[in-house]
Image (tube, rainbow, N blue to C red; front, side, top):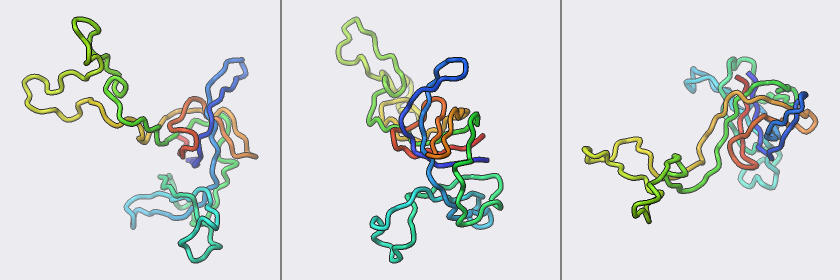
Length: 201
């Protein structure tokens, strides 16, 4: 299984050989290093912890040894075989993905604050006639008539976005090994600069 950590950039479009245009999202892959091996005997599951990015020495104020490079962050990824990885291995991101690879992309979606049921759950709202004035976008009855309580899972207004989203079956349409940039067909979760995980199926 191939995997990488990247940051979402701008959206663009790309033309195929037949002249059709397709939307695509630009992703800059981060340099990753294996920092920990999680084994089932100790942690209860098999996974690889990787560190991405590097902090500057002046950003490291608490660590005594300033020469040791700190990572911008760490992620744990489930892999098929943990024996092929060792702590300290630097994964060559330039040769990870090729054009035509089908991947799954995970990331945190954009936070949109408190939203009502029309925006959050696509409710149609109330009728626009017969004296309707202040409740066009209201959710309507929530009790259900005979019940004296609100059932669990009722669709209501609340905080929208800011959740982990996984989009499956996206195709890589372009790779640039010099700049560690790839183009993924379609849209990806999050805003510009959002950290995303790219993994093959």
